[in-house]
Image (cartoon, rainbow, N blue to C red; front, top):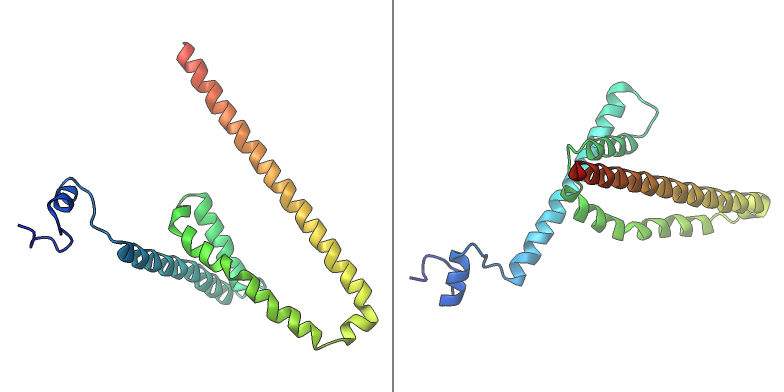
Length: 165
């Protein structure tokens, strides 16, 4: 009776599987999650590769990885690719992002001449560009949130009006 399903170790587990449940163990779920992350990273790298191919084919001055990101944003915004399809892989890659900045900063230490002559100007440019980027990102997120709230209000209002008729 139980030999038909490897996971069915007891009558209760067998009934659970028969009702449509699963027999996944924590070990299986970790393996599935790792495979899902790997596949999502492959999708992200495919966009980078396609962007590089577009850049080389059309001889564009924009880097291929940026073109790939633009293509990814377009596909996400027109819902060709759902966010869930790349969410875990992108999160995994973003968790390692700070490690990419450490070698760049340690490389700057090897060139103290950068800081002697134009160090103050370089520092000022870095601080100002960071502030401008933060302000622009904050403004853009507030604008997007405001538009999303307006859409929700319109939808709620139209639903309320249609129900009252």
